[in-house]
Image 1 (cartoon, rainbow, N blue to C red):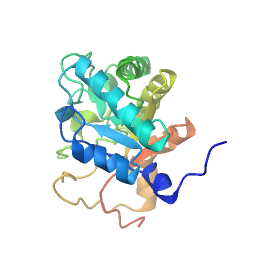
Image 2: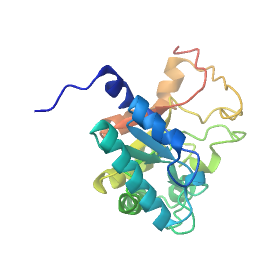
Image 3: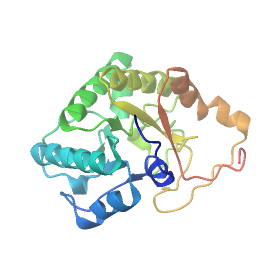
Image 4: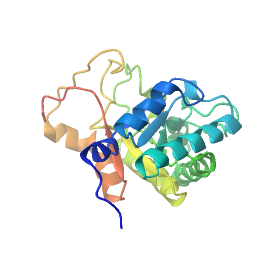
Length: 232
């Protein structure tokens, strides 16, 4: 018989945290022990090579299972192209715009399967990809080649193909950056963009890929930190 989780355990299962270095440190261990944090995101700062990364993922898994009784969800941003955390040991996969330029959705599916195979082998279960942003603003400083296209239908078809590839490889896909980061000239990592589009305009462009992904069964969506007064 399993005991019902405490309030703290339930909250911890809904949180994702990072760690500072390439091994478990005291701060991270205390965070898991005291607050029952159940999920982790990895960045380039946490990775030396594939052997170290696989060992780190195993240590994270064992610690969180020991402290919470539930296996963790270990996540990473591995879009391919300019957004790749795994380093030179991993297959260097092309980014979204390069894949879109092939005009073959099968390539997006294949990239998803390759990515999933490598992530699962390392102990990572969730990829914060693909980007479903429509590259409609050429002055955009943060999306650009991370988008499949400036056409929402193309983004939808290629994005859902990669989602299927990841899913078939037993890796969770988290599409981003809802409701769309394409039509801005401000980097939301350094400022607060404002997109003044009506709901109808968003439905005709930015939201098309996300609607397709939801219909395809994507398990999760990452939101953007952007102001959308037309729908807020």
